[in-house]
Amino acid sequence: MEFYELHPKDPQQRFISKAVQIIKDGGVIIYPTDTVYGIGCDIFNKAALERIFQIKNDSNTKLFSFVCSDLKDIAKYARVSDYAYRMMKHLLPGPYTFILPASKTVPKTLWTKRKTVGIRIPNNHVALKLVEDVGNPIISTSVTTRKGEIMNDPDIIKVVFDKQVDLMLSSGYGKNTPSSIIDLSEDIPEIIRQGAGDVSLFLS
Image 1 (cartoon, rainbow, N blue to C red):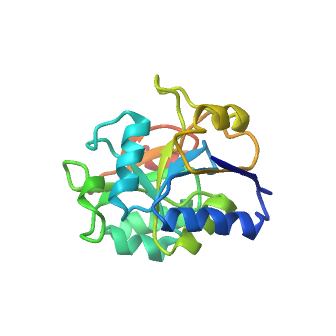
Image 2: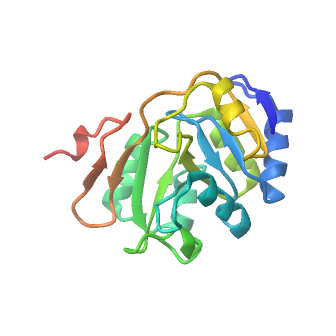
């Protein structure tokens, strides 16, 4: 594994570029978000997706969210209602995963049985710069132990995942709380997981 330490607010472009090239070549990386560290790859690379399923020890029926660069980008990959757009515009970038109806652009491997996808726009310079430079979304699934416990120490992550991923971008300790998951695929929003993001707007 290649390992690089980045400034969280002004990440070094040379390290971002190395990660982008690995992603474009079909590799798998670990990168920081505004919550926990994420494992990522190009959402359109089937072999790389399969590697992440194996790393996470999950069947490919599990919802893996992905990072988009901005709200305009989301519209390419999901159907967004007026209500969903207003909520996301108010809360993003931020520690949320929004579940939305999938567009045909998204590989069906990432669809749930309900034909939805999970989408993130984290408030993190490294993650957003990665997606912008790759030119399309990247997977965002939490770095955890086999038991599902969140790992937030970059040095420990480096040791555990050294042989499993191609590169890690580190920007200090990650947080212990994952994103809040809000389902906006239906008329009434549903809080799937209360995490780092404030969900009070969806409580009525």
